[in-house]
Amino acid sequence: MTKFYLQVLWSACTEFWAATDKTIAASAVVLFLIGLFNQKLVERIMTAWNGVSPWWSLVPIGLLVVYRLLRANYEKFVVLENKLAGQMTAEEVKQKIKLLTDLIDRGQEFTRQCRSSRDLVPREQVGVWAQDAVESVKKTFDSTYISRFESSVGIPMGMAYWPNLENRDVDGYVLARVYRLQEFVDELRKRLTKIQDQCRVRISRE
Image 1 (cartoon, rainbow, N blue to C red):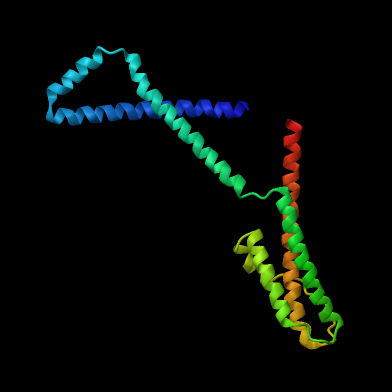
Image 2: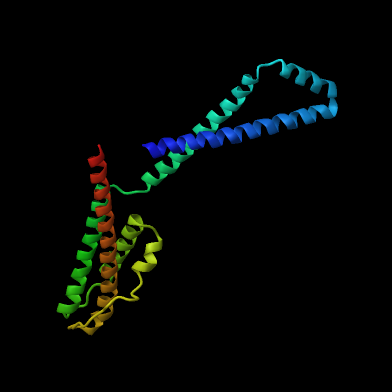
């Protein structure tokens, strides 16, 4: 709280300085332009100004300071609002975890079939599953995660037995994507833990 008000006070000081500087500069420019065409008018303005209380000069400066403070606060509010809008709530993260976990279960079922059955695993069904996974990853994160999802670099494949060797490629294809989905689920669980910790901190402060 103290930090917030100190920032507001500092902003007020800096805005007052900037507003004063702009007001003086603008007044000088206006008088200069008028003086180019009518020197007597400038003298009249200066004479009239000398008869006005100096405190009146604070009015336009004060209005400018208030305007700039309000604008600065609004800009900070917009930034905060956009930041909050881009963050998922705990419940949304749980839903995303469930969505990706269901996809993992579907993929593991294809892997089980590849390693236990002599029948060919339907590649069309595997393709549908993979496309569902791509769309889910894109919605959960963003399109930059797709290349990572489709990459098998660095994934330990291990040893396996396939009753039908024609299922070997399908098994590797599915296994790599299931591995990536599990990585994404782990990332979401870390986010969930962070959100829950932040909620507990806020509650303890209230």
